[in-house]
Length: 302
Length: 226
Image 1 (spheres, rainbow over the protein chains, first blue to last red):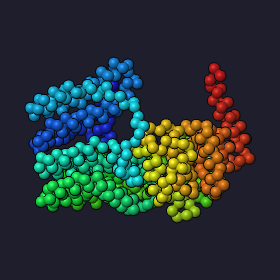
Image 2 (image 1 turned 45 degrees about the horizontal axis):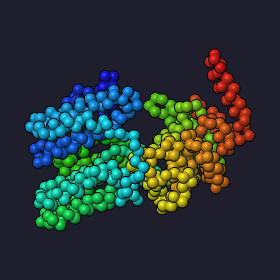
Image 3 (image 1 turned 120 degrees about the vertical axis):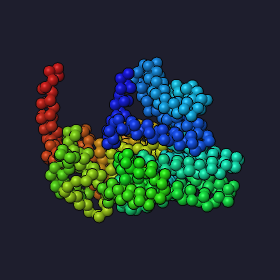
């Protein structure tokens, strides 16, 4: 029980440290979750699968982070605590699936929730996954390995879109690959890895952006080539989504360093999130993030 | 020569360093000692350019920051990158085009494995190796001997002596007095947030005796059992 009290305290502290009052914080999170869920079910045919997939990734991540419990509690108790925690995290997902009348997905979720606790996380991989970005800065070297499942999913979805002649799914696969690249820039690195650069702030940003564009273009190349070949009549839309994605990548780089060395604050994250709904907003957001990030890095890169 | 003039550093109202003035010469190994929390690491971070401060630090060359090798007490790592990729990243960032890391792997580290799987000592050896490969002029080494095996400690000690012979400036911190007396030409004692003493090599022994008397004897007298 004390473990769950601690988790509750930790969540409250996260809100407090982000400058959000606790109760509105919970309400806001609930609203975002409801909005995201309803939009997903409104706009996507395969929403139950995507939704269950998101839930599974979340629960897997949670079980990896709380694997330490096996050292603290007796084995049975630690398994029970982790299973209960999984159930608590699964409840909102279950509720939404029931509301959407997706009973099969809800049953799968109910059946699967205890299983991740049995996955051992002690085993350290001896072999590293080969990456085409071995000689590139860490974002894509590390990101390619961390998000390999997203890269494979994106290419698979692209192939399905061609087989089923579904252009929208093809565009979704392109957007997913872009999102994968953006995810690689979401968490700030230790300031040491900025300090090491023998560049000034502008030079640093030019390098980061050029590398980001180059590496994401390499990752996007198979998807773009396939889509261009099989949906040539939609080449303008494909090019537009490609270029817009690169613009978001650049924005995410500036957004990350605008809060550096901390994670993005809630207002910054909201600003970034707003730009995904209103792309023209980027004209304002990019200079704001650029100015802020230049200030944040001025000490480390003189 | 690096000249530090009236360096002061505070976090809010808490003063961490005050009135630090010092001249650091090339070809000399400096050791910094002081109690835990005395401000040694903060001083090194100011010197390297991680922290803002009041006062002035003047280096020989205008872009000296780009020739500083900094070894953190607990070197930061990035997940899912191998030792080889870590070295490549740190060399590339400084414009060093070197990829023959296996040949220069003095500590026999498994460079194809993820750095996150390395032990504390291995991470330290990897980070130290990176500072060497960067061909720096100034080496700031925060507790380079901690957590490292005996053989590697001896190797690091020898490397420091060779760097000194090459005319590099080496600054180290350590809590092990014998290592400092063996490696350093000068010991700087930080206490009460400032430099309390500069001790040259011929006075190391008397400084050791002084510490023994004032700290060990005084502290142990509080314990009845020893």
